[in-house]
Image (tube, rainbow over all chains, first blue to last red; front, top):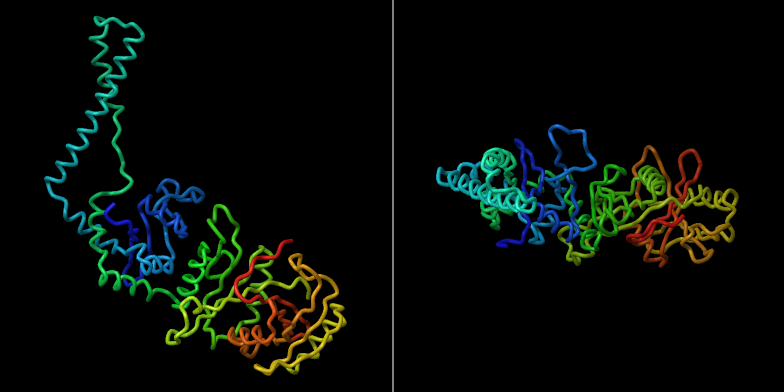
Length: 285
Length: 112
């Protein structure tokens, strides 16, 4: 593999920061092994209500994508631009090459099936003279049983994607993604938890910014509902939220977690940048 | 943050409604906050090894004024009390009190 980094496609509407998506199945496996689960969002046009068995693309949170870029585990790709240049680069030779490739695959399938067919006839003891007229019928059947392979990923696109993996392009795309985040503190909260081994997913289901799982979400229940980042020195705890969050969290067996982010300019160790507190209903009163 | 005016309210609630024992008031040096210390009438969590004295921080929930309890202040309280959890005694403006555990750092949910 030329690049083991994961390509994260940034799909941007007009003036939007963009949605980070991953289309490649191997990349999705790799992300999961490093603790980024994401959300599968792909569905079929004919079954848009279906939401239990979704497929590629995998949607990432902005914080996830930014963390992967920072850790050199992934790189951002401008989705529109990449597809346009890739499509524009297709030439007549390329098309012919693809057609030839398809024809070669058909020929290999025909060869294989004929051989299987002959062996079967031989086993059944069918004589050669009876075969001649059946042969044309068989050829027609065979043509309609050929498969066209649909690839998981496009070679045309994966070559183009790598051209985006340059520091100046990455810095620009990451900055665009960052400006779309409501709070920069959330990134530090994400990063601190991720680097302590937690899997994080979007937290709106339980009224938080993130939900944190102690391991792979398929194996563990989540332990915490993480609140949007607070300023460590300036933001007071909202006691109404402590009460509502603490009650709801305890009801669904989760701790309600707040993280305070210390200023950028302080010289503190990066790992002590965020200070966490876990809140739980005391069980009385 | 000043919580002197609600210490008595929370103390009375602990002693007379929650039936705690040995409830004492104390003033923290670093933050000038009042805290309570007392022994619950029963074990508060299945994860606790035994019945222990608890620290209570009385705070006022006001619908009209912004809160004053920052995370920096919580850190100061934890470093002075040197305990694994502080219980917030939140005095509501109708005179009732609700109690919430605050653990420093990340903590696992309690077993039921």
